[in-house]
Length: 342
Image (cartoon, rainbow, N blue to C red):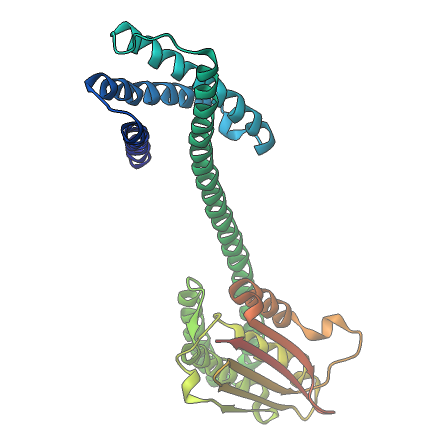
């Protein structure tokens, strides 16, 4: 607020000083000047500041700045004429009272001066109203961006909060199957699960993590699932070293891998495989997750939880720069493709 006041008073004093000095300069070019002429123009400075400051007071008091632009236009024009009349009347009145002006003011010259001054006051109003218009526009834009960011943050937190319960449910089912069959493996699985949960709780605070961190989580998860599926689950990682430091949403790959196992591999008695491949080009960063399985036509639930979650998070974080697709690669495999433009 203090900064705006400083700008206002700087513009007021500087603007009216420049206006009075400019008129005095052109008057001097046409006529010979004396001390009285200089004093006459010096009167313009306090009168102009007083009138425009009082006009500003009325504008703020009646919230004229909040009016729509079509209501402001006639106010600017009418007030410009009134302010011009007051300015002319006060400057001439003060000059006559001080004996600076002794001649009679011609009516035609008075009207001409008032009309000229009207342009000046309208111009002042345009600057003042224009400044506040763009200032309010900027504030509104910032407010909208903050609102949008807050909305995205809430939505992201909502999506991320869905990951841990969903992941825990599937992992606990894996461990439950081992408790009676192989208690030692069950203990190993519980240790792996605790490691994964510790990492996911830390990751929950972040919008992004590096691919290297994400892959560490994925490997733990696959090892955990490998205990349950044994030889029925194979996995292979083909990772471009250039991609390890790139950012991805936390647990994005893990949920797609989980989705591929639940809706693909687990349905086949002989099991299947998961292949994860990443690649970086000059224009984009690509992630491919291929799993044994087949998408059923017109079956929306067959795509699984991870697909919807991934789509929503990519859209919120990257907008149009990110793309996601899920389709049948061939008669035995499904491919999930994520692309993020540089």
